[in-house]
Image (cartoon, rainbow, N blue to C red; front, side):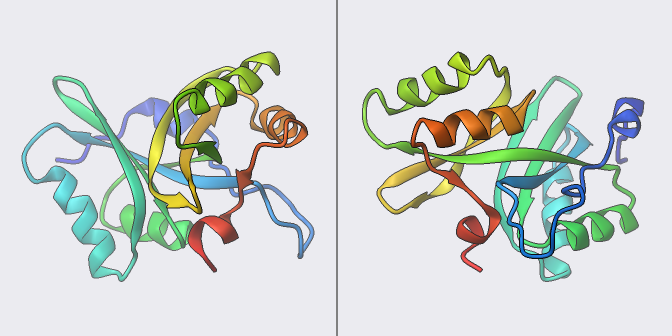
Length: 168
């Protein structure tokens, strides 16, 4: 049984907003799904995407006793959303920000200092499954991604856009 909570229904799908044709967004679209915390349910989501030829670039799974939240980043999020919804899942799209961090002691602290000084709250974060050059990549869900991006750019931090993240 697939679970969709009413909370998901209330959250606005983020389609990247209206941008100029050549403008690159510094935000990445993430898919989130609720699922029962039972054997095989995560695999069913992964198989649905696999059968459609959609590659999962990275994912995060948070759980409670009875359900979990799967957060996915895929290259073609619109198609993945449509495929998952056609399979009966309730899919929420959220904007996240991918940021590089020095892969050394203190690298995370320096990055968090910039976000905190901008007054931006981190709702959650997780590590990306690969490196960007010599740096690790972290995915952040922020209460004000635009302000965070502005602060990170001003501090010389590398915010990774979708083209760089997916290598397209």
